[in-house]
Image (cartoon, rainbow over all chains, first blue to last red; front, side, top):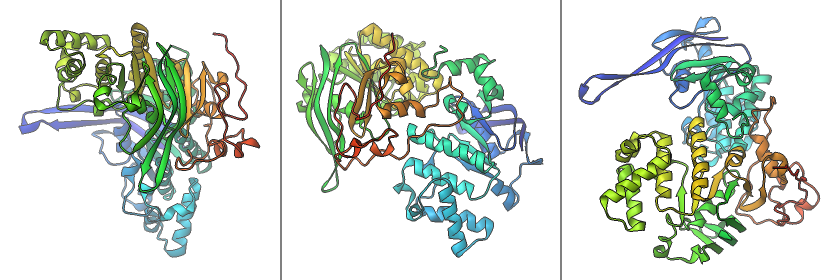
Length: 256
Length: 321
């Protein structure tokens, strides 16, 4: 469903007072494919280009080279339907929600705009969304700062689901959450993948989460793919030295 | 002989006019010389409050009772002047975010030497430099000379944390308190810092107190694990793995972090959230989230028995070490 071919992105920093430029190659030729209804994990350390890939898929950054094919067409956001089809969940839940809007309004806004719903129909839509992520409906009258981190991340996911997307891009969605809440959010992602048949691109630095969650995995280092394949293959028979290093760094891994 | 002895320590935080948040409820704990101990629990369980009270770094709106004895002196009754001879000298501390702990406008050189000057009263510049570089090298920094002259923003996260460890060890304390020292770091760097702490603990015979939410990480470094829940210690055991724990909460904490060696396709979840710390209840605080809940749990508050605060604990499997 999603095909990325030889994606490249270079950031140029102009130095102060115009003396020359420095180039940072964030993504250096990355190709991968996300199949229908699967979860693809992108793993790497800080600075490996994970987030740049997510931002390219989101249309926030324009790639310098390469193609992104979504449902057999180049990825474009020129119609309402296409914009709704790909949705995003980011790490910072506080920054993703407007602090001056009530939760109910935050979710109602895109539903009203994309599906032209009003009044009672709109409210039912909001309630359905909240329930699908395991939130109580009373929450619609609250503001983002009144919720816990886990609840806020559920609201962000509910808003993304309101668009009935076929692809969800999640950039470190659980990194700022407590361990017990992490597990709750991850099992929510799994449920959405199974029940709603949503494909997910899951970006994380924590390899432990990947094994139980994803179908396929990409290990990134310095903007290049170190290793890719099914989760089983990469975890049980890692080929690259870097993947082995990552695996041996996991706390509690006896393979050390 | 215990280095730190905590007796009936309770800490409340004042919220507004009449409300109190009970962050720690009558905690008893003794830590021996050269012992590595991990304090584990979710956010809001009182881990960090316990660590702060060890060096009396509690917030101004806190009310504490009980005693924290280091070398038989009560930390909680000391004046600021007296505390200077404890903080840094007897107990060094490192925190989660090294970038926030280091002062951005002073170089590493100034920050290390300031600590040594203040506590050890050494003024000779060459001697100071020699000590600082030696400390940096001891924490595994390769280009000690360059790092010595750098400012914090010129260093990577791992290097910053090593500098923090160097500062914490600069007055050769016997106790090192590490509050989530690797949470802000990448996995490979995390592994390096844990190795470093292990080595330093052995070389300097430190009493190490590691605060973390990651039980697997805790077991990599420590044998003794204190599990906290809602401001109380619920389990205090020497453990090597999940089977050696008895409290249902400890077992649940093991399970929520997926085990890389298992082929499970689902996540274990602890339902619900940490209870409201404003209330004092005559029941088990973990009752509503526990899968082993029984008749007694709602009627009385469990006491600590054989290192476990539970009416229906699991039987520990003794693993031969």
